Image 1 (cartoon, one colour):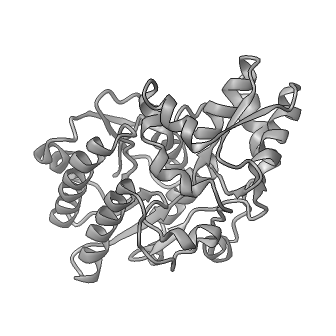
Image 2: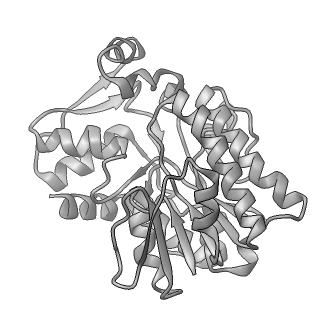
Length: 307
């Protein structure tokens, strides 16, 4: 049995499609899980209850923690450590391997122009402190020999039918509405984005590779990183719309945050847009000889499947 905690989310649903290549026993866990594959086992659960997390993990060979909480600092500070502790405890109790789908918020600000699995943890944001804490919870148990786990780390992502993606929301959807694309701070800085189907395929592969455990992996991401403006140009060509962009400075983001809750959470993260942001996934690509989707192909497929 392989179990997905957070099965209805952006990554969970595409991950379920990939896991059928490895097992016909897949358990989908969320408040209101929906089948992705005909043979999926549905496990409705409130993951805020450690006892329920334990029940969801029981009988699983591998658990994929891909939960996506609301983008809110108070929610993260309250819910992430609690869920991580419950998941770790359940995995240790039931001798289950853990795969955690993570982001890059814990990295030192000076690592952003070239992030690798060896980049130092020194977050400059409060959300980054939460991510650092929960990643270290896993790594401490691995180091102690109590847990078999791996961290699968992604850059900001984009892909078909992805309503959690900055790119989908501010570029694709704006163009769809006949509006200008939006970008943060500086559209002439390079910024890596991970294509969600690649991320799901790689996460499933890692979870089913014995020697991939007890370390960190950057998920496959096109190394030919584009500037925000270049990325927007690809969308405009695919969608056959004018190539227009409005760049939002920090002061405007702060003002809009008074009215738009998610933008209120963004100012502390703007260091990721005022400099080049390169996510190096060469370790994974070399180990698995993985052909990463190019930005040109990824945007084409995103537009086709989201239209």
